[in-house]
Length: 184
Image (cartoon, rainbow, N blue to C red):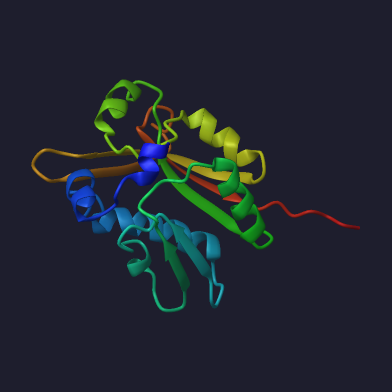
């Protein structure tokens, strides 16, 4: 961990680790995430969104002006998952939503995904079961999808959300909702 903390997240890091960032965020991928966000906020006049790990803001740029948008990215994945869950639970309004996307390292794609993921900041190389159990400790699971995604050698980025293949897809998208405590 100490070596990673001293690591420089400068232009050289992004040129090597995320040299294909633009190709890995095609418009159809961002539309999928935008549709999920729009679905959960319904007809709210001024929905709020915080994009944690927003990189260069590709997702936020797809939202229209009715959104109150914030993004943050420290060029390093979070070491404390409990801290993330604490913050998310604290900041969500009643029935607020938490959507996250993570690579998963289990299933038939696991042996392929693990060596292809060379990003040293990916600290939590976990299974889909881990992520589903992690989020449901404090939030209610609404829905989850598998995402078949990969940057092909000739530059086309495959991004196919699926419910059918979610048990074997190399990434998942999880939508959870804050719990409402009844005091009465």
